[in-house]
Length: 256
Image: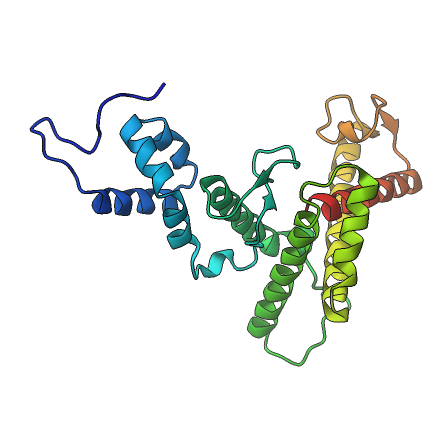
């Protein structure tokens, strides 16, 4: 329930001008986007101020922010942070800004995570004749651009229901991409899928060494299979992981 007191007025009756209040709120929301939820419930005066200047605050926070370039700032977008994957948020709203920050953090995490690892030291790939520092920068930029395409692929189906209709909308989006963009998108999906395969296999190998089973009842990975446990078999193991990998890649394309 919203408080009835005015947070911007002192006990002596001196009021804090809205401009100063907005600067404080802007700094707070910029540092911790989820803080806006608490601020909206703080008091009626605070709620009124935030809602009145919501577009202005989010525009100032998102304008020319390099960290948000690859988050797909179009309108509307799917809410992936704490949502069901079906909720949408419109531009220049607090939920929209929170989603952009969440996507930015996700992109930064994935570009450095081993699931998107693209270097093969055993085969000396890639073989570009460039310094390692520059190569890392190029790989990071490639990943960010590819992840942006994945977000766009998911967002293009905003408001569409049913797998067939979603795929049809995504097909139109893919048809409008350039050859380079399609290649970038395809490579990233394959890289993440292969990374998923490698990480899952490594994890299962560790569990097998301790239990002689592919999965145990209390395994964190047991939700992939309905049975309580599966005897370990290398070929069955790989085939099962590949099936899960295909499902995982499909979810990536659907939800970003």
